[in-house]
Image (tube, rainbow, N blue to C red; front, side, top):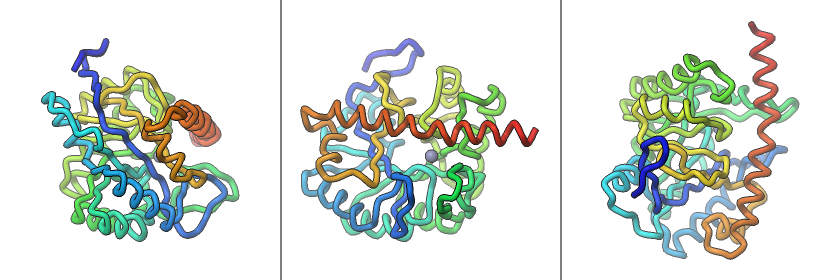
Length: 272
Ligand SMILES: [Zn+2]
């Protein structure tokens, strides 16, 4: 374990973080969903090739103590905390004895995803606190995806700190969990946000934006989308000489989210 410029330990053997959004039967125009059947194919494949899952806070604890993880360790995460995780993903995970992490937008618990500015598109329900407590009881790790899913890099320091800190407090209040892992909305962060995240007590944080930086407070998420086949999944896990192509694709997909970021910023300007 080396030390980065921020004085954080650099993880040289962190687990790949696979990130799903919606596991749904109703398709949407976008690509941030997979059908329950496709999700099960992915999970079956991961089990067949010998992967085992770990919670991110546990991975962080081991890596901080310089205990390396078996190379076949993987973290499965869900950004945004949709109802489909409970309805469709959890039964599959349980069937294959896998665990996962769900990143919750605390200001939208029990509400539709109106933060996702996609005119004319369908909305999807976020899990309620009751649904989240079922996931917690089933051994799913609960983490924060901030309060309102804003691009943290567009907010003032105080606003960003509020998003990062009070979401964690709310998860503790409502579910009694130590939510000590975070996923940056739109994968966007900077050095100040990383410092705030660390100060707030998070032990690990993820970003969907491919980056060369890779340590516990900016773990690289590998998004899984409607278009992904088993081959894509293999490429995402870095087990192919073509993995760089997959990383290029993920970079392009991350670029699409600028539409929502822009619309949120305009909406916020109109409100004030
Ligand atoms: Zn998100």
